[in-house]
Figure 1 (cartoon, chains in turn orange, red):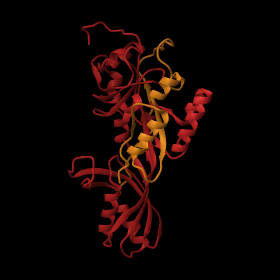
Figure 2 (cartoon, each protein chain N blue to C red):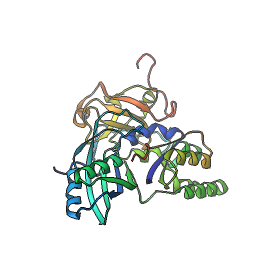
Figure 3 (cartoon, rainbow over the protein chains, first blue to last red):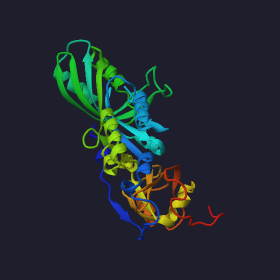
Length: 78
Length: 255
């Protein structure tokens, strides 16, 4: 069977339909969000240690950062 | 089980669905229950490089019905006695423990999963921005003391980072707030879009400032979207940006 297309190897091109500008008064580039907002709209690429469950690890992050809601990208299914 | 675990903070939890369905890569240590040759093992591993059937295990968080998952690749790495090390790239929701069991059945000697390390979850990989819990605790303390935003960026990424592999549609400022209120995306609001979108594809709706507005389901393909002048092109599924970030440019009664 031929090696199927791996999602992370797909390269996409950007095609333009119309031109317009964005008003600097509204929104922020993601990396320029004010700190508090940057955290609330942030993700951490965490290296999960052996032992605790993904859930427990997420709970630790929540406690360390003193946040209300912390989730994780799926159970590390085995 | 160790390795790449994307953790979403507060509002970014809304992108979890994009990560759940994204592809994964693991390095797996499998323990054989009998003797066999390296040739036989790599041969059998290759047989699994296909669409496979799996029934979720007893302890699973989903309904236990037979489902299919695609194995993009399995690469044999090393074998030492009954220990086999391999790398597997697969669709989200593939059970590697089950895969090892099934490989053991085909080999005839039986096998089980001994250790597992996730080396990729969608766009997140092991190198570059990956951090340990210790890093998180350390950098957060540094941030609290110094209040230098550069420190935050050392261990937190914007949620847009998680959408790197999802095809994007860029829209006008004037279309943003309607989407934030749950409206579907219509053709006039679109400025540019990426190739590879098909009817039913998940797409990410972005502003020209590269901010994520919403996750949506495309109604048609990239080519069609380029040509249409009116009508719905994507159905909004998950709004990511708070209302009122951009000005309201639509009249009530129009949505």
